[in-house]
Length: 116
Image 1 (tube, rainbow, N blue to C red):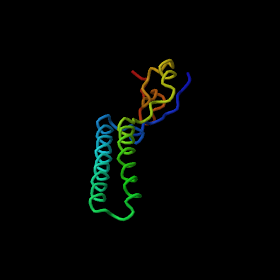
Image 2: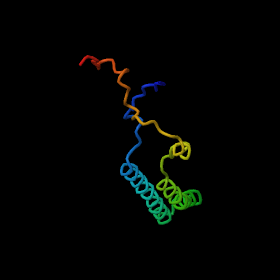
Image 3: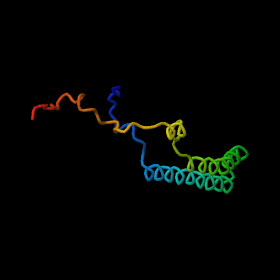
Image 4: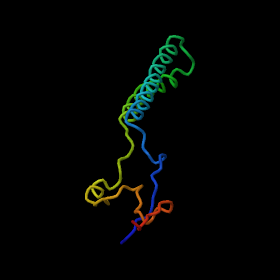
């Protein structure tokens, strides 16, 4: 009988929950859109105050107002990568025993009595 190697499942290998992932993506999106609003306000203040180097600051604010929403949407829709070889995992026949289970002869602390 072929024995499988005992491989414990670590909690640190578990992926984050869907709710946790969604919550962090929403916070990142709101933060980035807040930066966009800040670019708009700073641009309006610079124009109103007729600041020096307006020709430099205004395009930078404009680029921020155009580039940040695009990036915010991309990052908000980003999810962690899926399992590799997803199709191979479906086609691969899984063993009948769970990964944490050991056959009776491999349990060092379990004694099996053969006497009646």
